[in-house]
Length: 181
Image (cartoon, rainbow, N blue to C red; front, top):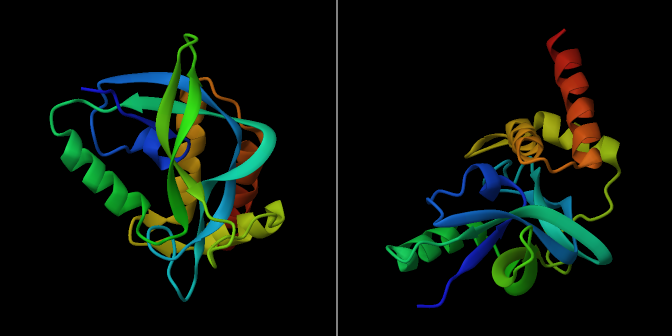
């Protein structure tokens, strides 16, 4: 049976909702991790959209994340659940993309890439605007800021630096602290 890998770059890192058979730090070329998708389901609502991370095509860029190999047992159920979660709207497109594992292996992984022609796409929002949205939005899976903070924390635990996420987290914390004062 052929191995199936999934590339996690946001919440899949810290909440995959399955137990991977194997994990490895991985690099996905020509894509960037970006808060470029409005969330109307999980971290916001249609009335007050939040923002979630997506893989945005960016020639020359590299996204560091976590590759997760699906276990053989229950694989079809895992894939169904994963697709229900990630493809809740048509803003993400499931793609099979080459990734490089930290140990040098090249594998093909399922990756959820944003469709730049979809209405939820919002690439190039200024960081201050991203922070304002994330500080306020809440959806079915909780406050948008918790998603940001959990992603930043788990990337750091994996040794993956993302300066923009760190800056954004600091900005959101300041906005939240200011609103509570």
